[in-house]
Length: 510
Ligand code: NG6
Ligand code: CA
Image 1 (spheres, helix red, strand yellow):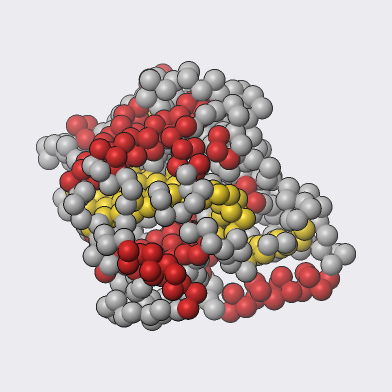
Image 2 (cartoon, helix red, strand yellow; image 1 turned 135 degrees about the horizontal axis):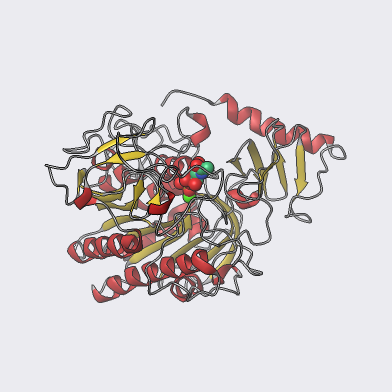
């Protein structure tokens, strides 16, 4: 390890002073929503649903208008968030099942390890979705599951292995399934059912809480009246109840804050709201007027409020840097008949952008990104181009830790932008939905792709086109007018950026 070798690049000198004044290092809380789109929060223009707790942080912090997740789905975005490396450089970083091996290998440097190096206590609470164990399908669900969060820098963990719609439907605390009765061991498979176990496909009469949408899958094991992706057996006493997931993970996030209020901590809090199956707690149901998807947004905002309250109660609100973002853009029907399409009204989860989750168009990866450091950053909207892969280098900059020897080639120090002192941020960011894209402040280029242009299941345009696509984002942020033919020089330039990036590595082994 390169132990805190002090570097003082000229550009950050004022912030070094700022940090030094602040004797105690700020606590860092990263609230990472699941599938919340650019237009889903009232501080980003939503009018049909109100998110007062999130808005309060936005109104007292920096609201980024051009911030990007590393990919348009969860696993690769989380990979990029924690490692500082674009996920498309590595094979096997696509959406993982609940029995996948851990995709961030223990030898990889991560944001959590950086925090530990800076003297922080670290925790991962909530959605994980990065695989567990060193071999797929061979995790010891009934014992200690390793490697896991600990091996990549989290001192404490209370996680869901994959997604709300994937087995195993249990909480895992410090790499052991919570409340497991050893006489009722858990078995997991993504290939075949366990004899005698009901499935959504064969036993629709048991689907008391939510039914899958036609042709979306999600019709395998039934847990709590909801069928899932994958099969599981056993572990009855450990199964989660969907309506309590937000309560459970929020309570564990709060408890971590309470227990560690006297030392600097880093809390990664990955919410399950608003991913499918959307089954928010009864106290939110019917409250948004937008159906279960909107109600889940209220549930997310409630979790944000509880975290802030816990910080206030512990007397550390002032000295805590809070970041709120999302792993990918929005989807309305993602596999369950939760009536979200019927209840959408005029709400636009994607904001002014085209596409959604899974898409190479902007709505796939342009997500809310709020940085709040009360008293340290002044409230503003920022046009700076920033990416979640910048987390690693930006915290390294904040702590003066030299990470130049680490494999973080994509992470860029953006402390100035995060502090509201720079409205430019990156020169460009590479996006990955179905294809790779390059976004600069003015232009967006999308590589040719032979895949389907549109998914009728999710009603999302993927951004696939067999031809080069070039959009002038200054006048066409909705990406409707492909001007590649009219701008050959710009097209060549944008393609050359992508070629240069690919030359640094693509499709490498994990
Ligand atoms: C898709 C699932 C979707 C969701 C997604 C992962 C189907 C048809 N759809 O494959 O429901 O689980 O994976 O979402 O299986 S994410 O936000 O965790 O990336
Ligand atoms: Ca997601």
